[in-house]
Length: 177
Image (cartoon, rainbow, N blue to C red; front, side):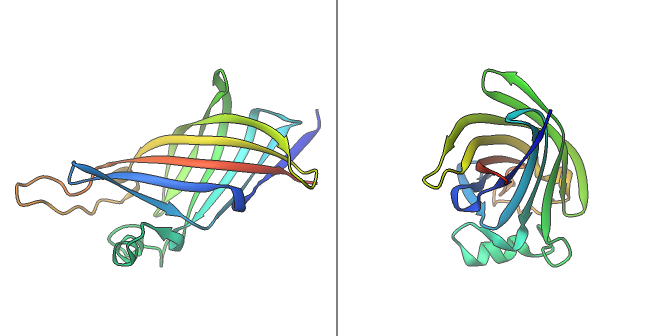
């Protein structure tokens, strides 16, 4: 079967994360610069190969001081590790329109296998006749497993930051010519 290459349309995609702060609220952030591609058998994504990268320096939590701290060596160490990458090893239909995507996530020089969900949103042609399709990607990782171990204690001895990071990405792919 003929393979089809798809590329991330950054104008119609977004990558967000959420982390608990003081265990009482959630802080949301985004990576504003990213890219990726997928190779599939025709238009079928079963067994597709996916590669995706995030620019750590593009992190945005709407607080410049916090963003700079996140770029520092205490967190992502963007000077030494400027990208976060994901490369799939398995893309399998799980249930309905949801795929289980397993692959190698590399962050801060540490690579771990993770599995995330990718819910297929459908396909359409845009105003110029280009074929697009969308996925909502969700998952959870433990930041400490990737060397993001910084944490302050509150006055009562609690942790200021949660360990689990929720990932939410809405990705639109464009069929490559």
